[in-house]
Length: 317
Image (tube, rainbow, N blue to C red; front, side):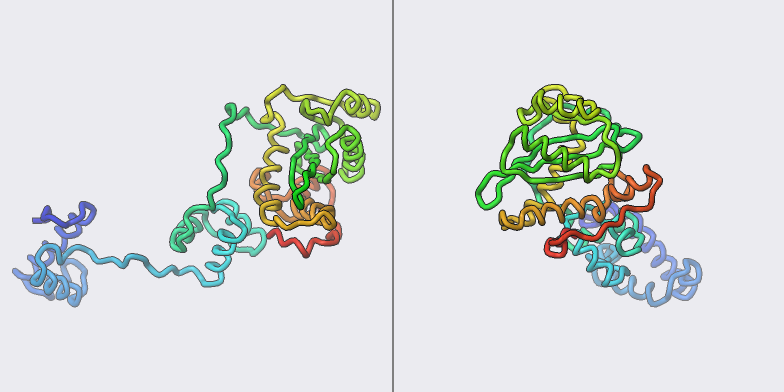
């Protein structure tokens, strides 16, 4: 009887149990069935009426399509903001809630909330080209043991500009600057800027074989006592940390501020640099910011610097 058409497989045992309760109630009595099975008499009466009206199909459980969430509305609003505005996944949202709002939720709970909101997936991005198999990740033990340098091409007001990036392998602490020329002179000026802004001694620099890092650049660094390592040709994954940070730049800065102008570009990039180092937590650092990781490795107080001009104009989070 419980194999009647229309009964979902997952409910067949439940229907069989309810039939047994109704049979006991018919033979012994409603009150006895209620005591025997520990079920309210009103529930047994309801099952009896539905069985008489609809047959076995009337005993199929009727759960609401969606159940009301016990989560407070304030937390739901925060989750919606994290998913829709910040474009965070469940893992990053969990860290964001804990670090910024002192709210602890399980990752599975956050993902279920996203599904209830109708936001199970993040916006689709352009499909990346297939790359060689990922090498085993590692990180240096001390800040300054290796600083990865790379250049990213961007367009501002229709003009091509070059974002130079220096990233410390140990702490992910970064220094950014935008130049109008892609040349060794820009590279040397940038590295001089990096040495002033990095709060530690740089012992090694890792670069690719781009024409902006020629022999002249290497000799200048070696004269300053800094070793230079070049990655293998056509292996950008060996500079994986700085390459990954460039994808973050695309997703969280350049794409969100398409109307940047050349006049305010330096302030905007400096504000984004400060946000990345002091505000944006990193899952790769187990929820710490690069500045917190750096302070931990240097055994120094957290780096607390005043926000640069323009920071309030670029709400990154």
